[in-house]
Length: 85
Image 1 (cartoon, rainbow, N blue to C red):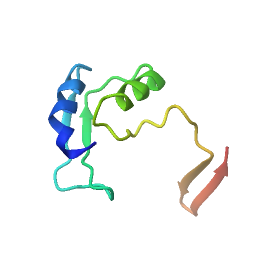
Image 2: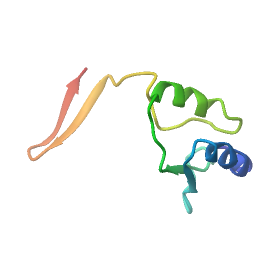
Image 3: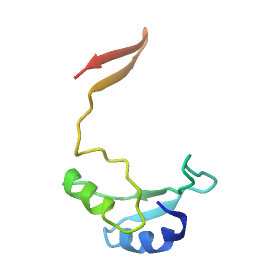
Image 4: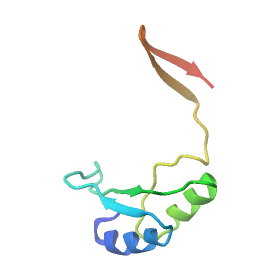
């Protein structure tokens, strides 16, 4: 999220009955900050992804529920296996 929106976004996220925790000491390559959500129950991932992305100050989130994966990378004892979905 945009750094100056951190407090406002955190207040909005508390409404989801979870605990937003600032990821201290980490900044994204675009200069943004991250809030990790502890105790969040995800029952409708697509709806939650839309809700999160519509909070002013949120750049993106890590749910990725709207678009499924094209490739799965699976670690195995023999190495990484790539599966096209």
